[in-house]
Image (cartoon, rainbow, N blue to C red; front, side, top):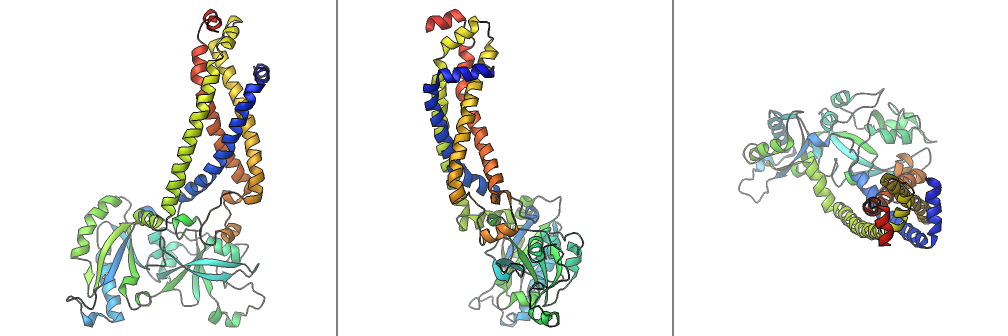
Length: 443
């Protein structure tokens, strides 16, 4: 059959040349349209590295001094800390709550984020590392579902620690960047610098007391290197209780939507102490959606997806229509093949084989043409802050040119084969079932 397919394609080479050119253009356009959508969709659906599905966040605020409900005696840092501690105790007593911890509003997961520069002593590259502050001695790591790496303290053990000012917990990727063997536990962050002095390291450096799995500070970033710095609740509260939010982890058998519906009425009645009051609770999934919308990331993905769907539908309809009309005109070919004993199934396979060969050739030409552009300009990458630097230390399939190019090319190939098959199957099925006499008479 393959020889017959090639023979038929060659005998109709002038007409097939135009079809080939059309499919090459479709392949190149599909690359331009689909590459950014595929990468951004992949990033949006990557695991964040922590257990977001069971987490909710409660926002706090401090009553204004202008309010009649304001208590001046409760405005001291000690009173604020005590008030938040009482609210945490009230939440922890709820039957659906597994754990609850305080976090700094702008320096936790799914927030604007806080970062600091770390110069990698191995190659002098400046790394922008996300920073999360947590209260030592609280079940922070277990609440978020983070896990200690093999050979180091577990999440439960880390939660039982109260690291001092010169001690720090880091993510696994940062450990590998600073120490190529990944064994960072017990070492100082800048230990590999040429002028490192262990005697003064306690004052000028941070000793690594724990390493946890990689997580993403914000879902849209795709990847992050993170340091976890222990503090006290009083240190986080500072001069405003509004700096603090409470992260709640619900029990495994509890539905998040039901929990939120049952818990919201308690916010206005029970979660108040001194001048500190809870005013809202949201699931982490909702927080991720809201942050994506506020940063414009969700709208960008939706716009690119909508444009991709619009252009692809139009391109596909055009290709399907072209092949549909071309196949309908081949009744004579089908009649001749039937007169020589070909079955309807054989005729359909032969016609589908022709367009598959044509589509495969066009796909190869189109991909090779786009590769010349991509080698110069590059392919779509995972964005986010400091994304290019992180790609060197936390490589993903999108960072490997050949792997990236192969995956997207195969996706385009599947789409192309599906489109041309749709354009040929229906008319081929109809003309393959007519009698040879009727087919030749119609021609």
